[in-house]
Length: 207
Image (cartoon, rainbow, N blue to C red; front, top):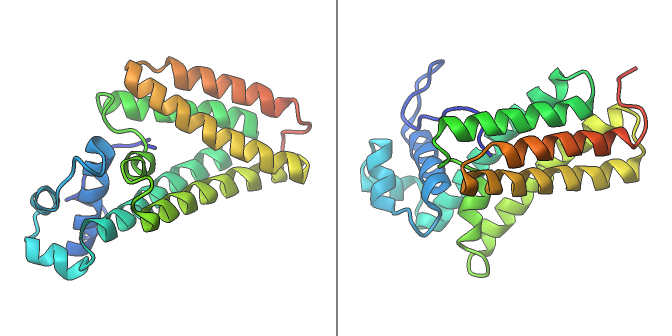
């Protein structure tokens, strides 16, 4: 998922090492083009690194690099999701805020930068178990963040777990629909309905 602009070669706060530049470039390119549409040579060029450097850090080639790229995408969205969940007065409002941020990120990228985890993993289904495992771990971490926020809002444990699954699955699907249709509407609608759903499950304000 994308909520902010990404630049694989620049960092406003600290110097970025070669390995990190390679991972950021791979994450961004696979986010835009998918796994099969992205080549090692293109990644090295985007990162400003030599092919030798790429294989030095990732001797397992593109599959190993894709796992690292998924981890980068997972952490990036987890940070944004955590900020959104903690910044809202209640988890229902957080769903609306998160959908708006995802929609804004897509629009700013001209609808080409959707979820880096999904776009990378879909092209490898059934033939790259390590990539599938990395994607599954990413989704699980995002669900855990939502679950924790729902529990802080005093929503029952089983309900919170089910809702966390629903939230991440719905946002993933809505983001893909928004990307394909080049419209914010799928995400904004999903955010409103997720908020309404969460409101059905009891207290939503922190004590």
